[in-house]
Length: 123
Picture (cartoon, rainbow, N blue to C red):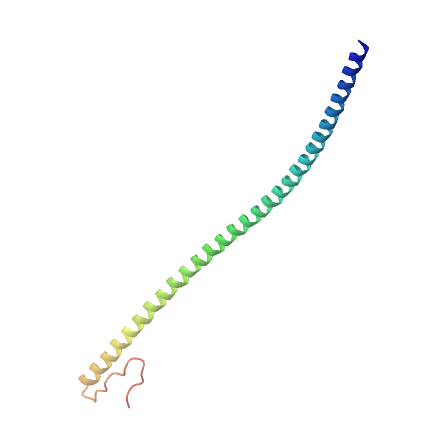
């Protein structure tokens, strides 16, 4: 009948309107999600750039530390070498002073005691 057809048509139009509203709402949600995704991608890109920069700084700091460690080792080796030279020179000095005392004793002259380490000879 005409009334049933009209009622069915009205119900179909209501359903269609509800679907259009849902579709509009879903489209708005999809647009908002798309914008949020773009914003997240930008933040991710910025964070990745910062991470890359920090990684480069960390590598440079590690290389600088390694260089400083090598230099410190070289300086320690030089210091060790100089210390050995100072000890050898002190030993030589003692040997020379002892030889001078023996020479003076052999010549029959007065024998002065060797000076104390780091001191001045007695008069």
